[in-house]
Image (cartoon, rainbow, N blue to C red; front, top):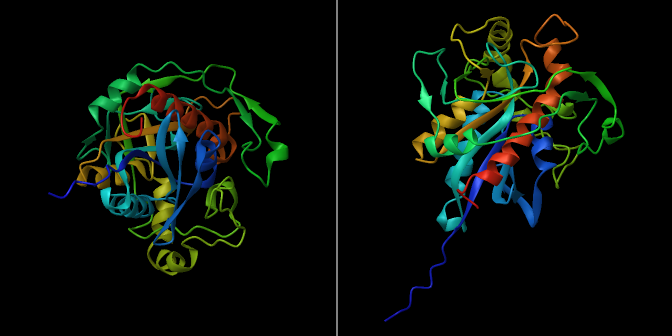
Length: 312
């Protein structure tokens, strides 16, 4: 009789972000493995520990198509055969707040829609229950740059704006994601900085020469996505929700299709509560994106410390 020598794969939580400022905020709180980088179909995944949980951290790129593709690639690659199994997915990043959420607040919605409320997808109830017990201290001042950014670390101690209030965590309610790119992948931009860049600045394999999906995505985006992207930014959905973004529902659809538990955590970068009284989006986004990303990362770390789940 041959002994069963099969080794159980290690469980990890897949932590997704959309753009470099969000990813840097997560990576700043992640202790990376000795050999942290896994590249699959030109997508970069980083292995480490966050909040005591084993995680796979990835930056999807902006938009629904990028979010869906990166999630699908991860869930197809990190299977028991690879030695790592994804037991849950968390999407952490920034969003617009419309309703009870204000700039700096963090929302963990109960459900998400990708069609302006026509249909809804509920998040994992056990993950939501764990989030409901969180107590966090969120940032109320806006840094000029994230401390993990190698290029702009000298500015990280400079505080630009004080929200003059204590941001709140809201668990429950609704979230909405929209595709502003007419189904095309939004192209990353080489040297595109904290928003449009192709790679987190804190990535262990960061290179200023890395182009991400730019050369593959720019032509289809110019043909199909430019006009719809502009009109999408100008339009606002009618569903009364706590968080509006361009990625979460797409990642959730992929996770749901694979039967993997999912939770979305979003910090508010625009909406009500602007002490500067700026004209609104996108001006508020560029001013408040860092405090929103930092607060989303704070909640993500606290959630992983509280939740006894994949990778614990």
